[in-house]
Amino acid sequence: MPYDRLSPMTAPLPEYRLVRSRRRTLALVIEADGSLTVRAPL
Image (tube, rainbow, N blue to C red; front, side, top):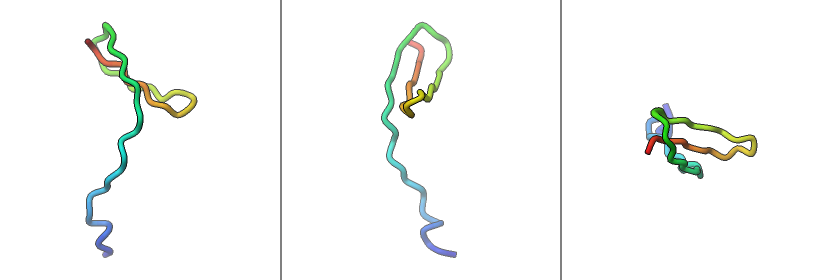
């Protein structure tokens, strides 16, 4: 078994936009252009 399969995967974190709003749950929205919007409670 190759050693690279045993090492943990590391990937860069995606660019995202954080929107704080009066909601109770977290929402992850992938826009049409591929960007990520995170909507989170205050």
